[in-house]
Amino acid sequence: MSSMFEVIIGLEVHAQLNTKSKLFCSCATSFGEEPNTNVCPTCLGLPGALPVLNKEAVHKAIMLGTALKAQINQKSVFNRKNYFYPDLPSGYQISQFEVPVVGLGELTIDFPDGRQKTIGVTRAHLENDAGKNIHAGSVSHVDLNRAGTPLLEIVSEPDMRSAEEAILYLKKLHSIVRYLGISDANMQEGSFRCDVNVSIRPKGDTKFYTRCEIKNMNSFRFIEKAIHYEVNRHIEAWEDGVHSTEIVQETRLFDPSTGETRSMRGKEDAADYRYFPDPDLLPLIITDEMVAEYSKIPELPDEKKERFVKEYGLKEYDASVITASLEMANFFDEMMSEGISAKNATTWLTVELQGRLKEGVTIEQSPITSKTLATIVKRIEDNTISGKAAKEVLDYLMENDSDVDSVIEKLGLKQVSDDGALLAIIDEILNANQDKVAEYKSGKEKMFGFFVGQAMKASKGSANPNKINDLLKERLA
Image (tube, rainbow, N blue to C red):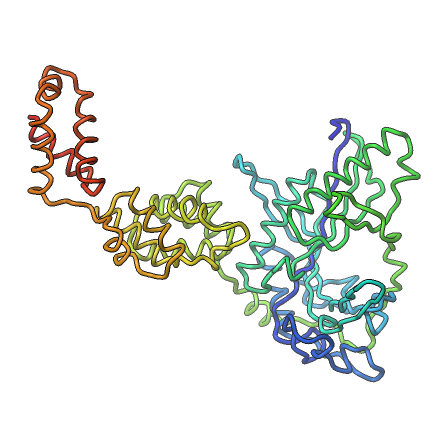
């Protein structure tokens, strides 16, 4: 990227709330049903059908507002956002425009080198989702099961200055939404997706120039690529002197196969949507009691990270890696409840187990439970098996359903700690290598490693290395 320009990025994230029913009717929000079966007169936009607000969606919105240290507006209004689309049967979306339920807030992102930056959050408002268009060759189908599903749209300030910052913001927000339990935030299913607004300006300039919106992104990797492509496109237009003609306010789509964005349609301004208060819905009034009740939220990623550092003595970096995912953090907490050392738990979770999970397999899909992994660590700590043997046990359990102790017995990995058996091995080695014993006693201390190696070899790796060390020192003394 040219150093002459500054990148300006703002994000609009749509998190699908995991309520049982839709935002304005009692239809189920379940995913993967037969097309057009979770529908009723209200979400089909039939004349005379009236919307009724889902209280649980308001609850979840206030939870997020609390997590973002945001202003909760105790009186907010629903508006009609008018536009035609085949999967929007009413011809308008019910959204919040002038006064959203959640006002100004903030989110802090963490860089790998320990730096932090606070990104402003403009608002978070409730709205109903549209349906889904399915294009098959020359035929298009419309599935309205998703129409009316509750969305919380979280709009950032244009505070991000690179693709890296945008991805850190999205990952942190994704993590917070999952910790709160207000959305499954499944990106593949589209329940956490975002629109990316990108523009650039000459360094030192304070004006905002024409922005382009990249629509409906649901992959961190593709978002990063789309931003890089779009920034380069804007820079080339500036440098060629055609910025005002080539960079127009528009909605663009990202094509993963080419790594390019392409124009989809001109981008509307708010006035084009003809917003007006929805005559079928009263203003949303949130009482003091509701704010007090709905503001009770669970431990968030930053708080959990701080606790792991204080309670378990983890390094900041390790705590960040583990708490980035709710499932990973819970897995670690469960391992620690088995009474093992935090250092070993961290290594075996983040290095050994994570390194063995195939790409795309999450920790909750792992064939190894937290208790099983903790038991493997316990067997190292109580000297039943060596660290090397423990890796064999883990490899076996990744492919076979069994328990740790049975696998240790089956594979013959139990460490020999019996003094008599180990002394017999040591004596045999020392007797067979009297010349090397003499060298050791004359001051060549490096020979000690030779004796340890021979003893481990003679025991086929089953000897307890600590015991071998201690007994060898005794004999050689």
